[in-house]
Image 1 (spheres, one colour):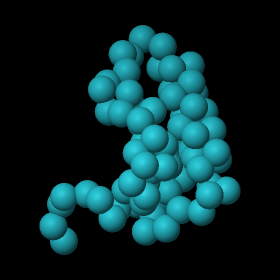
Image 2 (image 1 turned 30 degrees about the vertical axis):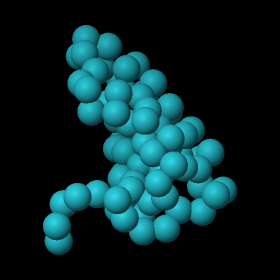
Image 3 (image 1 turned 180 degrees about the vertical axis):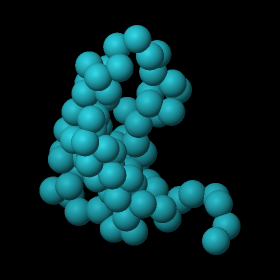
Image 4 (image 1 turned 45 degrees about the vertical axis):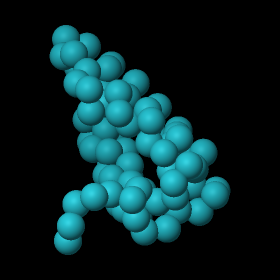
Length: 76
């Protein structure tokens, strides 16, 4: 469970990062895959929510638009 939280924290750090290096992109995909599979193994009775599916699209969005923090529409 602790490792799941650490993986999620790393994912959030990368999603909220103002700059993502090319080397981090593959690591980011591995983190997402590890998080989703670990969550499924730890909580097999709980259905994945749409927000978990959206994680699978983040890599494509980052490679297409750059860091997601620079393309979000929420005003600070």
